[in-house]
Length: 437
Image (cartoon, rainbow, N blue to C red):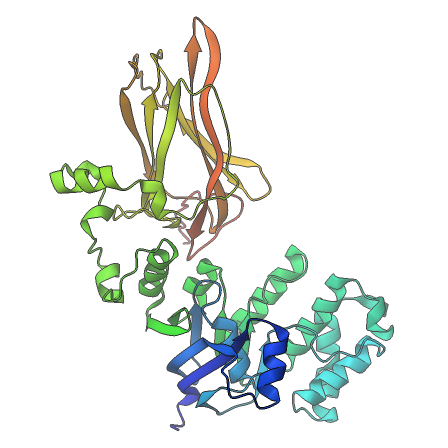
């Protein structure tokens, strides 16, 4: 293996046997010739390399094999086929606290865990103060870890793994442990590792972190490597994969350049073929929806379809911060209604309404709708929310003889993921221009 390569994964497969019932496993162990199990490929012939000093991200849907490949790389699991070659000392942030002895004190577990990673007592002695300072759990370091809260436990485990200063850092969704202040310390340490030129292999569902930190990204799908390349290209492929719009012959370059299928282009093109396909397929079928949508209203007018569209007109749950996007809805009048008002709102995961607007605020008088009449409403704006997860709601209201009525409201219909390369303070970016003289 080249000296410039820190991790080499060559044709790695991992097969699990799935049995219909426990007795089938026993029969096979006792030598039954009848096949009692089905083979499940958690990984299928996966190959890639990570260069020394490179930060590589791995993304994919649940069950794609992300955690499995990390466990094989760190030696927690053995591959069924293929091989992994590592050149450098690894520290892994996988299952934090694995290997801790509940009866030992925090300090004793620091030495135990450090020794398991391959460090000498002298090396751990030199790092002990940094580890305890980073964990910041006070006098509890001298108490058995069985007395720790879950937060204290992961803080200590993270501090041990991150402060040993490995040559290769393996991270699996472990940067968001503890409270917000501890998370900030974790990200600062992560950035320090990048500046020091450490090799980092990073698995996360946080697309903002993937886009911000990674030099290259690998996309896994059902155990297969679908693609690898620049973060933006692979994140765009992942967005399509999430809504079942990624095809076998799709490649990162064509997706990043905005080459779209006809049924993904905004209806505003006016193309007859697009209109026909749009009529056959609902927008919302291409979104990841909340399985427990809360809706109410008298349904004089009904929201029967909705979408989030990115700057290329693709229906998606993921929007890049700073880009142009659209929130769309289609409404059908089930009976005559007077001057309906159409609205959307965005909330954070804690339920706080962050922003939103409606056709009345924006100065649009719709006029009366006759029964059976339909309207397509499009709110277009630049996405200035910080990178985060949000919830989207739609509504249609109006007045009947001067009295306010809710015709139809759909609460938290889907998630909105904002991918950001730069977050500022608060909920949204004021897009400040800085001049220093």
